[in-house]
Structures are given as structure tokens and as C-alpha cells.
Amino acid sequence: MQALSKLFAFNTVQGKNKCDTVSPLPTPLEAERYMGTWYEIQHSSGASFQPDFFDCTTALYSGLNAEAGTFVVQNSSTVSFLPRFGVTGKAKIPG
Image (cartoon, rainbow, N blue to C red):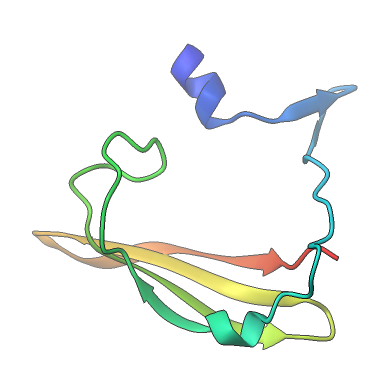
């Protein structure tokens, strides 16, 4: 149970999940510089969000909406006997 609570660490207020407050960045983030595909070059063993048997992990940052401060993140990996798989989400630049 302790490992599960660490994996899903969040604040609960009156029975509702509440995200942590994120402070604005001290300087504007030049998000367009980070758009594109990023490759994992070293893996940290024992990470709860990514098993050690995942290979060829990438993160694709795209769809930047500079006015709204949002972009799309696609994280994916392979396992020797499966096609590439992953998860897609939206990110927001604090500020």
C-alpha cells in the first residue's frame, strides 16, 4: 500500500483530488526550442513510472499553442516483442 500511495501522491481536499500549486517560471520558457523528439540516453532503474524492461523510450513535444501556453506530450517505449506503445497528454506552461 505504501508503494501505491507514493505512486499516486496527491492532495485530497474534502474528498476531491487537488493538484499542487505550480509557481510561474522566473523567466519565460522558450518552449519552441523544446519541441520535437527527445531520446532517453540513460535510464534510472527502479522508476515507478517506467519499468526497467522498456527500451527505446522517447518523448515527442508538439502542437505548441504559445498564446495558451499548452503543448502535446507523447511518451512512448518498446519492449522486445511488442510494437511501440505509449501515452499522450497535454502540458501547460506555468505563468
